[in-house]
Image 1 (cartoon, helix red, strand yellow):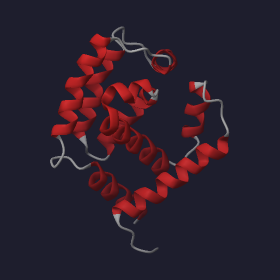
Image 2 (image 1 turned 30 degrees about the vertical axis):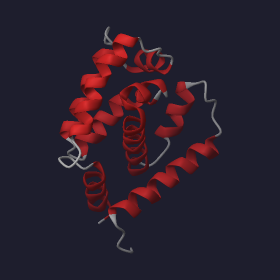
Image 3 (image 1 turned 45 degrees about the vertical axis):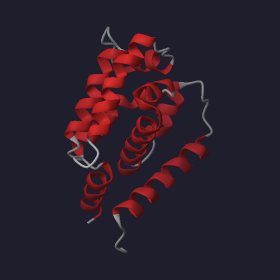
Image 4 (image 1 turned 60 degrees about the horizontal axis):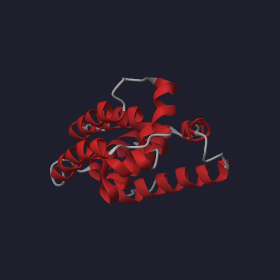
Length: 157
């Protein structure tokens, strides 16, 4: 197999994941159809998709955007994927956002249904802002592209 850079490998897997979602033609108003489509991806595609979407959302509009766009449905998977690639500090930040948006501690499908339809209060947005600041402070300390790429490179050896 050709030797790909981390960025190229991540890009190919993300493109493949994105194409699968486009081809799945699921109902955007149904978290369960979206979730099922993502679960149908290979492990590496799914890992890349959820980590890239986290990073895109948080970088562009913070954790408020992450939850506003319903990507929070994948927060438990994202935490697992981040720990898997040894992005422990990032996983901790995502974990600490959960009690802000899910104060009653809903789990599994109840959590996903709740978060998919979540309307953040101004207080929640303000609380999530501290997670945004922590996430921004990771820049240069915990590089998701490097960690994800190295993990994926090991998988394909």
